[in-house]
Image (cartoon, rainbow, N blue to C red; front, top):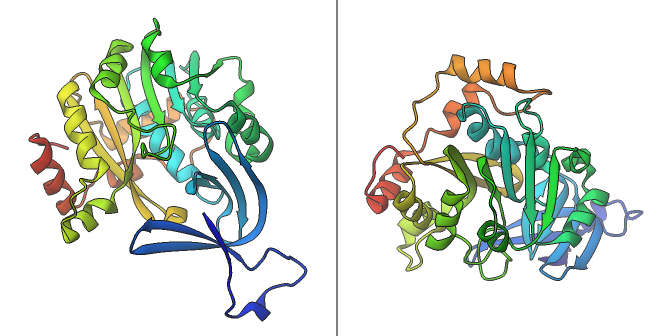
Length: 320
C-alpha cells in the first residue's frame, strides 16, 4: 500500500480533514494501478502474520487491507460474501455443519448463520489479532456473528487443523487471502491439502472458495505471460480430486474486478431451477439477502466464452 499526496486540485478538499488528500494505490500488476481517495486512516498495525490496515474512503467506506491487498469494502462486501456463501449453501440438500477457513472479518460467518438448518459452524483462522481488530472496527461486517452459540472459533494454521480433524462437514468455505508469497495462505492449495479436505467431507459435501481475479485470464491470454493465472491452476488441480468443478464470478466494484469463485463437489449434481433456488432461499434463510437470488445465480454461472475456452483447454473437462 502506498499513501501519496495528490497535488492536483488540492484546493477542492476540505482542509479541516487533514488526511483527505491521501490516496491508497492498489497495484494490480506492473502495468495497472487503482486508487482510492482516503477520508481517514482508522488503523495501521502489524500482527504476527501480516500487515493490517483499515482505511475510511470516500467511495467505498471502510476497506480492510492485508499486506497491501484489499480484502473487502463496506460499500459492497455483501456482494462478495453472498456470492461466496449462498450458491454452495443453496446447492446442498440440507447443510447442518459448516467449516469456514479464514474469513476474519466475520461476514462469511454472518451469511452462513442465516440458514435455519445450520447447527454448527467451525471457523479456523490463523490470525487471532485480526479477529480482535475485526470485532472492534468491522462491526458492519460481522454484526455480532462471533457471539452465536453455534460458532466455534479456532486460531490455528488450517493445514494443522484439517490434518487432525475427525469431524465431517456438509459445506467447507475457504475465504483466504490469495495464496501468494506475501500471505499466510501461501501454497495452501496442494494435492495433500485437497485430499485432507475430501477426508473431512461428507459424501454430498460442497467445497467453495474465492479463486482470484478473473481478468488475469484476459491479460494472460493477451500478453502470453509465462506465469499461468491462479484460476487455471485451481481448475486443473480440483478436477483431479472432485467429480464436479464449477467456476462462477461476479463484479466487485471496490475491487474494480470481475472476481472468480470455485465450487467442487464429490459427485455429479443436477442444476437447480430458478423456482427451486428461490424456494430454498425463502424456506431456509432467516433475514434478507441484498444480492443473491435465482436471477443473480444465473448471472454468476454464466461465464464469458473466452473464459470457458481457456479453462476447458487447460482442464480437459467440459461443463465448467
